Length: 589
Image 1 (cartoon, rainbow, N blue to C red):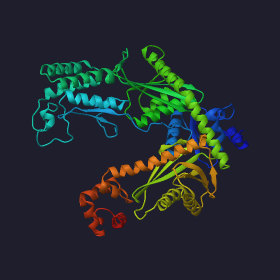
Image 2: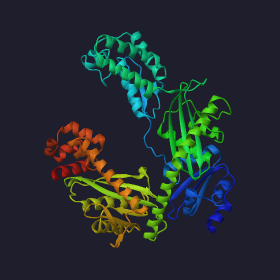
Image 3: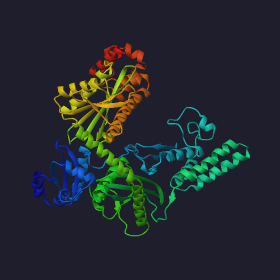
Image 4: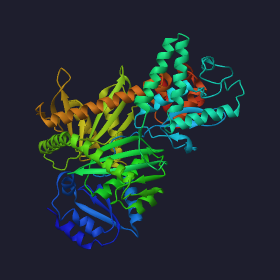
């Protein structure tokens, strides 16, 4: 039921373009949207019967704000800016935080070919091919080309001819002067293959396979035969009969209830190069959903084609101005058929997944209802869970995972390096919790509704001590394990044991959080250890990041020499505070 306060605010909203923000009881922005007509759009949330995720949003709204803009483009820019700043829980969160790989071909005096992900520093975008939704296909493509063509294999030219030259997979650029014509011919063939012309390279492989057979080198011939099969199965792309030979991406959406299935086709030189699929829960109109999705998609995958194709309900001018590329919506022809094909694929994907998604959502919402009833707090949403990892009682690290309504929010996960003086789990937890919630107290981080502690009475006591000392009002529960190291019950903040049904949805979702934070802390520890003994030690010291670590490693070379160094010698590399941290740490291990 809409409060009188909201009703009065709705009366004052003007019929102008702008961005609106919904807030919860804690004043946290939980949704940001834009509208051509603010009054009509914002009112629609409260004057219609809502279901699913939209109903959850409306029930969470306690206040609303809006900012009027001079144009629709300005409202879009403002909306995206606010979403980046506040990361609202009801806005679209892309599940996959990884960007797609590309193949980078460096066409110069010493041509090279490799798979790249970080495209921010790549200047010559004319020689980037992709994106490759299947990273194994990208790597296999690079491997085949490197086997067939004698490209440069080393990062830096060596002083003498290496093994690659002697097995015919490099022209020996370090010692031999190769003609420009030979290099250009090789480069032209490689680029032609990467654009979809498989015939040249397949003919080369067939020739090499026949030659190996004639020389009775059947093992090598079998390798070439496998390459041909890889090209036919893994690397071939579906041909599309299009007159347009340039690069463009196709976006379309199919929606049912509160689920939106989004399909992206990557068209490169008249080929369907690959596709991307996503199913998300949504609260807004299709135009808003797809526009926001496209913008976020290109923020992660920042190499854009010359054009994108979208359904006709999208405001193409605004999106084009924002992305600075051509945006079109064909009304007929082959590209229109491709747009409809993307929607059909999105529908098939959602039809196949919707039943399991709905079942999971029902179970999740039931678990959320149970935890709220159990703790007598209907506002519980944001949960933070902690765990520690160590090596034989030393090198402690902490991990924190964040779940909102039992859904992971990986952008909010945090890692903690614990002081070297800490030698036990409770002390490590104490330090991590204090550092985390001191930032909350100072307004640097948002406050959660519930803290989940992996442990029993002692761990809950430590957590309560920290939270009380900071005078924060946050609920706490401990996940107590039995003698078989399985969660058996919950421990409340007043240290009462609460039995829990091991077959309930609440138990299942709490176990998922427990497993997630445990793996997160262990993986962080493994990352540190994988860098090597000395680098691992340095990573445990506050104030030492990759740059300072490199400087220290260059100066002292070994842990022994570093431990023998005086404070003054350490200060030659890093500032006094960091040097003192390092000096004390080295003395303690």
